[in-house]
Length: 180
Image (cartoon, rainbow, N blue to C red; front, side, top):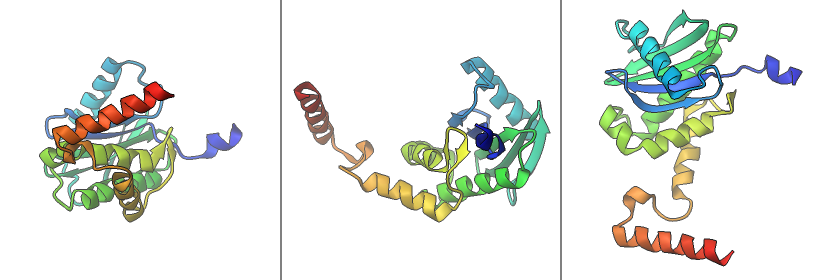
């Protein structure tokens, strides 16, 4: 357990729109036990940072005992939060990896509409970067490559299937689960 205490950890990663509403969020600690606590944190971090211009490089803010590193592109706001004892450079590296991987996956067409259409890729991206608060990968090309190979596994994604194909896939999965 002592080794995990020295390992850098992430409290959450937030992707909010230009109004502070959720696009994709992942929490890795119990610091915010309820949905209302999470929404209140998201609102406060958005309100604290919305007047800044973090479009060219990441900005850092400390509040409520947390360090948040953030960056904006078009109508999306990217945030990575750590404890007040975390290294800001590590948090900034995680943020940049997430930011760049999303850019690669969305072919540099990073806006809210495109992000929502490709939400599955963004959530997979978060899973490739962090697991349980522990940083797994920060290199954008590796993250995007792993996410892209997940998409190639098995059949086409649900968004690319026709209704008939989706029903056939569901029927197959149901048949397999009944036969077990």
